[in-house]
Image (cartoon, rainbow, N blue to C red; front, side, top):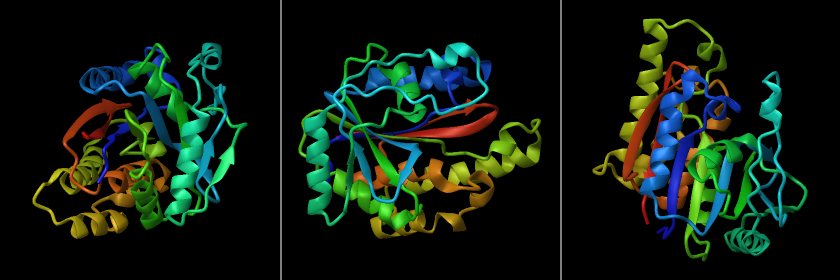
Length: 266
């Protein structure tokens, strides 16, 4: 289906991956490493967990700013720069492509790029020399609609496009700040292993794979790992954009928990 590289990353806690935080060392190494394995994209489309809208919304600014959408961090967290250009022509093409797939979408020429965009990209492509656009989630958080959004994005006709889902395969904020204990570890791994099996097993029928993702709440420890699912949905968009098993999976211990990265080649 897709002729694009598609990547889902767990982006860590706020700006901490950029601040030398010890709990993010594996994640930083993972993101820096994956960029060397990818074919360098000519443009990047990011679906971040940190933007929800009534309809899918696309950034159209020529030079988007940064949205420091986190609180209580050191002052240098609010001085981070990532001066990537936008790509209005690509954004317009995305809007048209979504319309062709009966998805009503909205243009936004004011929104800045949130930390789900600039944190992983600053690690992967620190030169900020690749144009970036962002597409929102739907605030209804409905799994099937996000898979359908990904399926529509797969039809974008743009050479060298990387579709990047930026979320977190584990996102229980209370658990991040709970001391290590075997119960949390067991629950974390139960869902992570289910996710890995669902998205990497090549002998799984695609109809079954999709249904498992639609019914993700039935997975082991699903609601413990995702009390609210906005950080999981970018992964469902990535699956929708590919419609097949991921080619590569890796995990990184992040803030003391296990979280994953999934990659689909062209």
